[in-house]
Image (cartoon, rainbow, N blue to C red; front, side, top):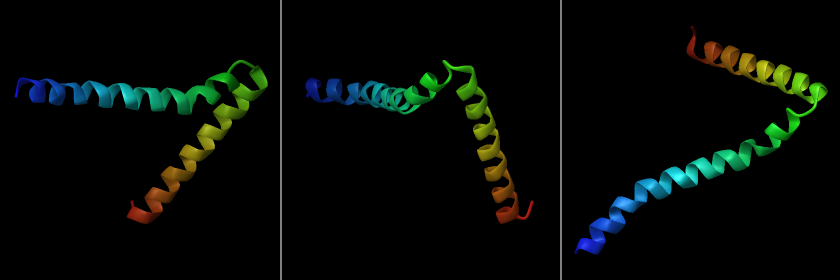
Length: 64
């Protein structure tokens, strides 16, 4: 029975490490884009445009 509780307590650590690994894999290509000044500017502008689009869409949907 002690093995059961020991394994059960390992799941949060596994979940955190898996989630962190997934985030790093997804963000890896974006970090490579930051190495050149031209792509850094494009990445910053794209991020700003996407955030603005999401904010405007949510305001319109929620009547804010």
